[in-house]
Amino acid sequence: MADNGEEKLIAVARHIAKTLGHTDSMTDDILKIFSNFDGRLREKLSDDGIEQTLKSLDRRLSRYISLDAPIWSNSVDVSSFLHAVDQLIAAVRDWAPLAAHKRVAACLARAEDLLQQTMLRLEDEFRALIESGGGGSTDSTRHHPDYSDDDGSIEEDEDTSIPVAEPVEDYDDLLIDALPPGTVGDLHEIAKRMAAAGYEKECCAAYGACRREYLELSLSRLWLPKLSIDEVQRMQWSQLEDEIERWIKAINVTLRVLLPSERRLCDRVFSGFPSDADLSFTEVCKGSIIQLLNFADAVAISSRSPERLFKVLDVYEAIRDLIPEFELLFLDEFCLPLRNEAITVWKRLGEVIRGIFSELDNLIRRDPAKSAVPGGGLHPITRYVMNYLCAACRSRLTLEQVFEESGDADYGKGETVSASSLSAQLAWIMELLDSNLEAKSRVYKDAALGSVFVMNNGRYIVQKVKDNELGVLLGDDWIRKKMAKVRQYHVKYQRSCWGKLLSYLKVDHSNSASSNGTSSKALREQLKLFNASFDEICRNQSSWVIFDEQLKEELKISVSGHLSPAYRNFIGRLHGCADLGRHTERHIRYSLEDVEARINGLFQGTAAGAGRK
Figure 1 (tube, rainbow, N blue to C red):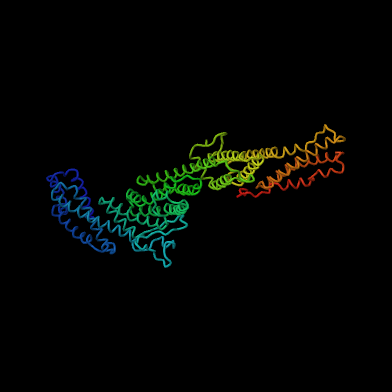
Figure 2 (cartoon, rainbow, N blue to C red; figure 1 turned 45 degrees about the vertical axis):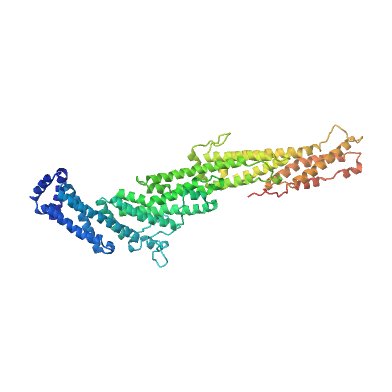
C-alpha cells in the first residue's frame, strides 16, 4: 500500500511540476512542499536521489546492452532486463517535468542517452526473436504437414533461418502461425516498452523489415520472380502464359493465407497499439503487394491482340475474386493506397478486355476478300471467330460484368439490342462477320458457288450459336433471322444455277408435235442444251463442299424436286413426237434415274476449310 501511495504522490508531484515548475526556484519550492509529506519522495526527487537512481540503472542496463549472447536466451536475464527498462522509462517520464532544474536536466540527458542505447538493444533482440522464430515449431507445422519435412522438422533455407511457407494447393481457411505463442508474447513485451519509450516507429520498422523478408521468401517459394513491367512486356507470350499461371497461385496464397496470417501476427505483437499494428502490417506487405499488382498491370498494358483474351480474363478474375480480401485486410489509412491500387488494376484489366474485343472487330474488318475458299467451304475467319467466341463465352458471367462496367451498350450500328452490353457486342461482331463473308462471296465468279459459300458459313455460325452460351446471349430471334438469311441464299443458288437449266425443259404447248417435225426438232435442240449444261453443272458441283449433311440433303432434295418433274414431263413430250418413232431413245442420254443419280453425286468435295471444328 505504501508503494502504491508513493506512486500516486509522485504522479501528483509530476503533474504540478509540469504545470508550474518552470524555474529552478519554483521547482525547489515544490520539492520542499512535498518533502513535508514523505521523506522518501524528497529523497527520490532530490538531485542526489536522481543521480543515484541513474547510476543504478546505468550499471544494470549496461551489462545487458554489452552482452554478446541474446538476452532472451535466459529467462532470468529477460525478467531482470525488462524490470530495469521499465524503471528507466518511468524515471525519464518522472524527471522530464523537472528539466528546468539544471542538474535534473543533465541527469535527464544522460538517462535519455541510456534509454536510446537500451532501445537499440531491444530492437536487436526484437529482430533476433523474429528471425529465429523463437527456436520452436509453429502451429502450422503441427497441423499442416505440408510445411515440414518427413521427419517433422521445419525446413530451413540454406541462406536463412527465417521460417518460410511452402506452396499449398488448398488454402481455404488456412492460417500460418509462423511464430510460436511464446515468441509472440516476448515480441509484444518488447513492442510495449518501445512504444512507451516513444520508439514505436523504430519498432514498426524493425518488425516490417524482418517479416517483409519472410513474405518475399514465401513468394519466391511460389516461383514468382521479381519482374519489372518492362521485363513482363518483353516476354514471349507463351512464356508469359506460364508466368500468369504461377502468378494466380501466388496472389491467391498471398491474399488468402500469408497476409491474413501476418495481419493476425501484427495484431498480437502490437496488441493495445492498433496504429502500430496497422503501420507494421503495411510495412510487411507493401512491397509484395506492389510486386503482384505490377505484374497484373504489365499484363494489362501489353498487347491487346485477341489471343490474349483468355489469360487476361484469368488475371481479371483472380483480382476480382480477391477484392473482398483486399477490402478486409487493407482497412486502415496506411493500407488504403494498396486497396485502391488493386481496384484500379482490376478496372484497367476490364478496359483491356473490352479493348481486345475491339481488336477482334478490327481483325474481322481487315481480313481481305481476295482469294476464294475452294469449293465454297468454311472460311478460316468464320471458324476462328466462332471458336474464339465460344471459348470466350465459357467466361460469360465475367464478360457480362466487364461490359456492364463500361456503361455503354451502343457498340454497333443498326438496330438497338435491348439486352446486356455483352449481347450487344456479340451481335455487333456477328454483323461484322456477316458483312465480311458476303463481301468474300462476291469473289466467286460463279454466283451459285458464292451462295453455297454463304450457306456453308451461315449454317456453321448457327450451329455454333445453338450449341453454346452464344445462343443464350444472342437469343432465339437472332437465330431465326440468321436461318432466314441462309434460306435466302438457298433460293439464290436455285435460281442462279438451276433456273437456266429448267428453261431448257419448258415445252411450248401452242405448237403441235404431230405432223411436220418442227416441234420435235426444237425439242431435240433443247435436250442437247440441257444435256450439255447438266453435264457441266454436275461435273463442277460434284467437287463443291457442303459440310453440313442436313444442308446437303436439303439442297439435293430441293434440286431434285424442281428438276425431276420437269425432266419427266419433257421426256414424255419427246416420246410423243411421231416423227421420231423408234429412234426417240437415241436422243435421250439420261433416264430419270440417271438424273437422280447425278443429283445425288453433287457436293462431294473435301476442300480445305470444310471441316466443322
